[in-house]
Length: 187
Image (cartoon, rainbow, N blue to C red; front, side, top):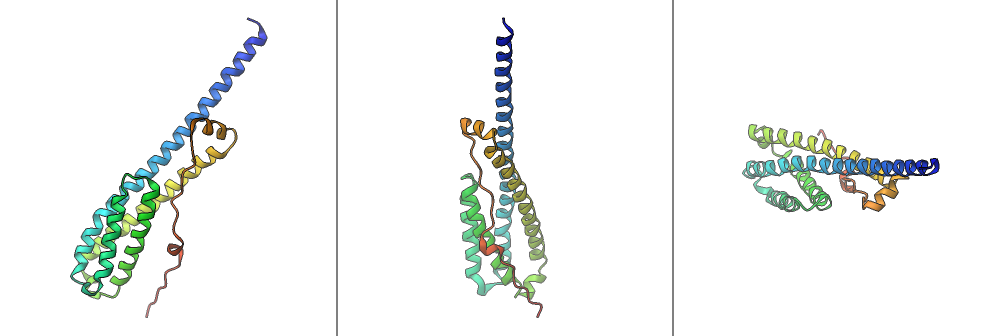
């Protein structure tokens, strides 16, 4: 074999190795994004399991707020119905549930007996802990999405991504109304 042929073959093998390494990196990033979503899913399941207990506990205290309780239950049902339908469907439903829970928590402040209940306090602490875990999982998911999206858009990995059908993923974003600073009154 001549030297020119050997060099050509080495270049081809090097290019193939480079493409394989880019492909493997894209696969690793895709799986990291999927794992990030699964972590959110675990926390959302925990949240969905806690909400019926909370609603049942506060129902007797909040006899005048049945509409709010109904909204929370309906929002939870919509969120549970999106399980397994992918991040996009779940994100929208979860944002609706977050809004309904926020309204419920705000109304609960008007019921001193309710706030003093040991069961309600315990459920609220568990739900607050779960909300913190969800926030952390969302952050991890968005970090994973960013890493994958950068790889999908960057040269030369964008060529490999296009050849093998890798696409950008959607970030878990907060709706505009959830960004508003809550009004707190100490009077």
